[in-house]
Image 1 (tube, rainbow, N blue to C red):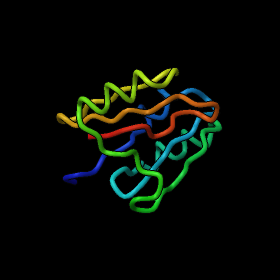
Image 2: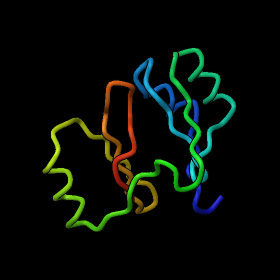
Image 3: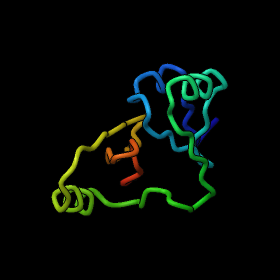
Image 4: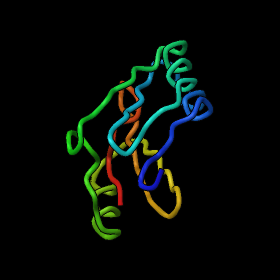
Length: 98
């Protein structure tokens, strides 16, 4: 599955109960992950291509953007690709990706 991220049950169990799991064209979840989300009260949000996707940024832009906003951020690096989510009141929200 090149270019896709698979969300597993283990990934969902690592999320805070009651948070949000965002799925889109490049991010899919296993049936076990969706079951775990339901049981833990995690809202699953499905996005269309380009709708609400985190903006792509350069390293310099990213650092400047992070410094300009207070908050708690989660950084995930998989296969050399970086995804940053900001922890909001409803759980993780897309912030940036490269």
